[in-house]
Length: 282
Image (cartoon, rainbow, N blue to C red):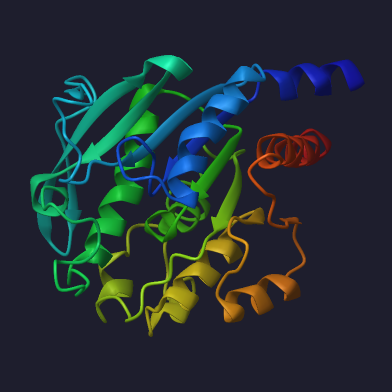
């Protein structure tokens, strides 16, 4: 049993879904974790896949992005409108890792990430989060790649745990995946579109699941993501106080903030603990 468990953890597949990754976006606490965590986990022998949105500020030529035709071509329906899903990929040669990008002309071709030049948040940030979350999960399904751990970084990934636990719960690729949600100091200061909880609905997601999003604030969206996850990680030295209080009250594994020189080993050990739970459950 111990040998089986060790080999299972060594060969585990980790899916990283990130709001920011450097060098595609400027360096920040989150973008550096998005860049170096997958590399560190891969160097420990794990198989990884990494996804982020293809924001319009990303220079495709300089970063050598190209479309993956076999993965593109699907339409995602959001608020009764079809939106083509385009998948692009680039390589970080020094890390020997690929990054997949979720792209769509309506949502991701503007030159700013979440707000315009006056600091006003885009009115469709809610739909962008829906499209990104569903786009990642549909693409991984097309890859026929079954992750043992799904690790989400940043609020734009917050619907991934909900969709995995409800809409994709019977999919054999996902039904044994452990979900980890990292909370950062990336609050948005006004609620998302008031129709958000209606737009995000899909088969398997019911009213009770999204009742907390009647007010689609950063706090409520983050609480939903944590509720639907198996574990949480505090990714910033300080986070929203309401979220911190909520995390202190939950009865599931939580990894406290770890500084730059410690987090790769700490996160790897945390994955191992979750994977051991999975072995015990099986």
